[in-house]
Length: 309
Image (cartoon, one colour):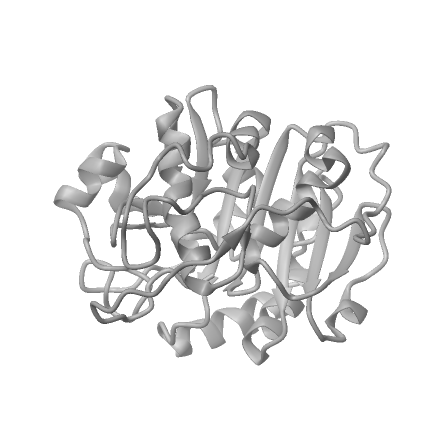
């Protein structure tokens, strides 16, 4: 989901609808999920998304989690997904955008209640990228281990515009955080008007978003939803901890106010994938670095199956 479209002061009406999960949506059997985390990967067809999916399938799949690949709309990319007992594929109509679509799947038959840890991600990012000295680490644990009794939303980066939020291309949370994000009773509890929506528009994962504006508004408000319930957030970007001590409001007072996921917008430089594990690959941020790292990592023989148990 894009969170930093360049817009004028014009106002667009957001349209959302609360919907019950699609009755025709066929979910894979997860009755024996045990305590593995659930990793949802949302995909819509594009050249960049396909390259990112192919990389993730080679480097990110492992046996320590259940994976659900959500293919939205027309695509044959599901044929790329290898068959493993813990890897499932879902085909659905391309509606609701990433957060709304994942919310629909998680609510269907109370799927989310079968798990206590979650990662949601989309195909706008490439990774995982881990340096040689960290090759014994499991990429999903890097995110999930930062979810604690007090921190319930973890990502890679923060955007301060138009309000402080954890950017949604990858999130980690637990059953407490997911319960907050999926609760329709809380979806209107943190009203805020911005370029993308009004005080009346819901946030979180409990609604289907009919426009990009509604989807972005929901992303922005999801961080407020978590913090309104007394919990904190965390991200991997070093500037967050160093400039604000882990406080998102303080970071946006003293840190980088503009969206850092553009070329030379991270305090005058660029985020390196080794800082955030994943790289936002649809923004033309240092394409040479992305190309080289992709090539090197595909050739190094390392797979997450080796370290994620």
